[in-house]
Length: 105
Image (cartoon, rainbow, N blue to C red; front, top):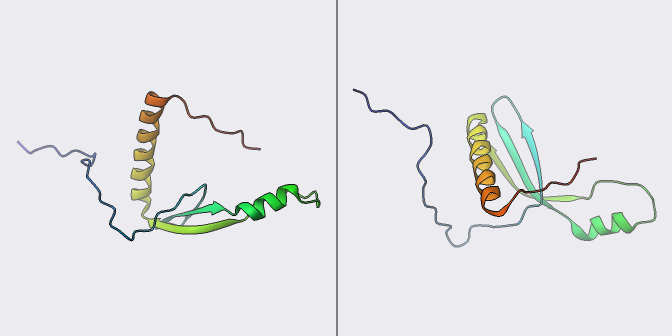
């Protein structure tokens, strides 16, 4: 009888070696081609964002974002990543409570 294979990868330990860049991202954009999904991670440039909020022009514009990293993956890996993130968020909410999101205008 053939042995069944799990579609869920085993939990692996990961070590972050010294020198690996780490950063905080509070902005993300997603680009898609037929072959790739590109995740652009960055941060809102706070001084410019504040200047835009308190500026006198009256125009409402998006704050500038500095892209710190681009992660390129296959659509299959993107789907597996989305599933893994959904699992992590579900477990987080079970332990700490529902995560609220601001209303998108």
